[in-house]
Image 1 (cartoon, rainbow over the protein chains, first blue to last red):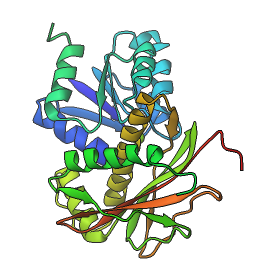
Image 2 (cartoon, chains in turn red, green):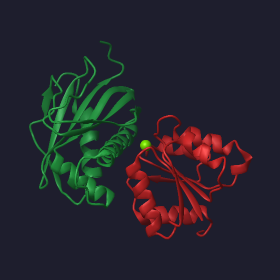
Image 3 (cartoon, each protein chain N blue to C red):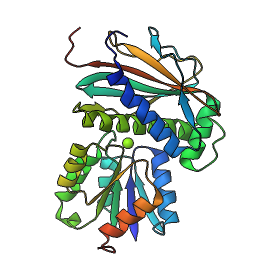
Length: 124
Length: 162
Ligand SMILES: [Mg+2]
């Protein structure tokens, strides 16, 4: 299982990596600082889950998700957005752009585990 | 408090309580009086700042003394932090982002739409926070067993012309 975490905050990438390790999904984690860097990595590497922030410089998470979803190669790749954006209209916009699940920061390990298992179809 | 009423300030106070007490074990308490700031020179060591646009314009800053920053960042990251390095500054930026994001949600529930920028960090004793001209600033101090910190809310309605 390979997961990419995309966030401009090195702290948040570290928290997400540590959390993934704690909940049993930490074997193979890639990192990117923004959507542009993530697209570059994804052009050469396959991942099973994308975890992305929204507010990032250079390319934000919403633009990144739209780019991913316009590429047939990534039709089915689950995307979880982990963001401080928690207004109802923002969550709707993210889901409409192709995000499968949504986590509001700060989050607990249980919440991230639950969302991962949901996008992997391990829960009903 | 010309131009800056409680309606603008309360979401930031609520967000600060909620975020700091979620990511950290410390208990915090807002101190009075709130201070109207003409010159935004802080008495703190490090600040995270986020710009605000939309139906309100201005900024929110989160300012810490070194000791308080190290305690809260250690709790937030789950790793003991010994000094203010790039990682600590990044964490303070992200904490500011979390507070601004939570305040944005509270505003949206009152049908006020704002956007928040990427955080910036300013380091150094007695640093200045550049708020825009003609936007009133108010400092809201908090105390905790690990020292004091403050948020500086600098905001005005975008419909007001100056
Ligand atoms: Mg971010």
